[in-house]
Image (cartoon, rainbow, N blue to C red; front, side, top):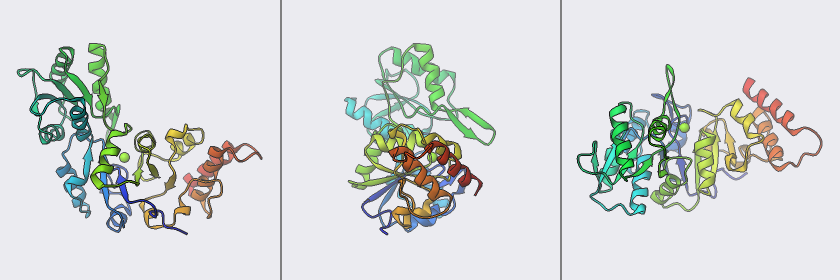
Length: 315
Ligand SMILES: [Mg+2]
């Protein structure tokens, strides 16, 4: 059987839930990426940290990555500004963490934190220090004509205490106040960051690896890329159940327990009606494959898939 990575020339890998959870490495992730036969880059919606800080965090887990191979949502935001025609040197109002200032500076813009110099654009991403004053400054600038780019619209951030407001919630606060939505959103599931990552790697056929269906998998599909869903982060039994009737834009090509799949055979993780192998995950792959191809006329596919997913969750 052919290895999974045959036919792919690069990996675009999500960070949280794929490489680490909090400050802890996800099992098998470090070894699997160290052994990767193809180049890989990291793609994250995290706007608070600059690439070097994220690379450092990964290095502490024992995995080396050059900061130039870390693609963040603020980089997508400045790519949008460049495409939109905002000239270099223009003042750009920042709402969020230092990761945004750094991306804006690196692209030749001047990051500002208030309206003393009239900003031509507002880039809004997550930062734990964002408060009323910054949100208000952004609202005034946007109302005065600045183009408004949000790095991502994740509504919540899971913390050790529960759910906290994510960038999407803070974007909504401005949107409710001024009565209009951002001009652009650049993070996953928008395709822009995926395209940027593939360009960075010189890749024409990358495989996207992620743990979230509504960002990683949907984004890969929108960018026209194949994807592997790993079950080490957000996606679990409920997300697999939701996949039974999911629209094609949410469907991964492959599903695996973890990144050990990267060195294994492609048939072990492909969602297909005739997926070989035994065990709970193989049942899930076959069940979803049947549900998506509707090739099973013999009975209620959904019930069979649900049973397979239950068996997987109890394994
Ligand atoms: Mg993730």
